[in-house]
Amino acid sequence: MKFENINVQFRGGFKGGYVPVQCLIDNKIIIDVLNFARERSQVRDCEMYCRMQIQIGGKLHVTWQASEILTQYMEDCRAQDVNEGTQNFPIEECIIYVGEDRGYYFGPPDAESVIPTEKELEKMMRRYNNRKR
Image 1 (spheres, one colour):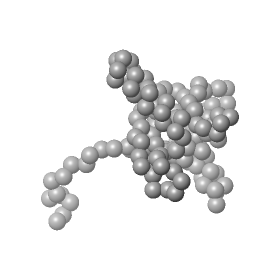
Image 2 (cartoon, helix red, strand yellow):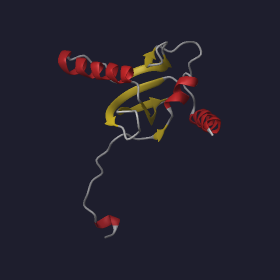
Image 3 (spheres, one colour):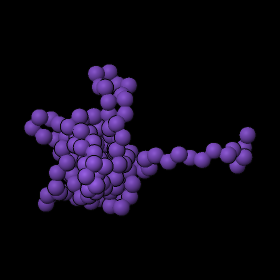
Image 4 (cartoon, one colour):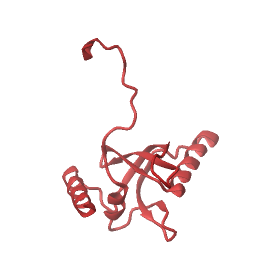
């Protein structure tokens, strides 16, 4: 059947290109966290991971991480939104950093934090991918 004749709508979901969380951490990229979803992991020794819809400089991106601390923090923010009527989401202008316990945390941007342009972000990701190989 031709695509034009299929009467099924796209459901939506997280949109945008993937940005590795380590790239966000290493470059201290300022993000807005719009949404998240806890998913069951297929990776050995990892029960779950968390997909995150983020925004960098007004453009949508997706990242994921497996930090239970960060995921629980976002779940608590969402629960507070529902139970107390607050509005924690979107979590605006934050960075992700690694704590002393090696867990991921959100924090306020510092003097070294950046909001890269699309070209700068692509360059950062190329550097990150080349370093991984």
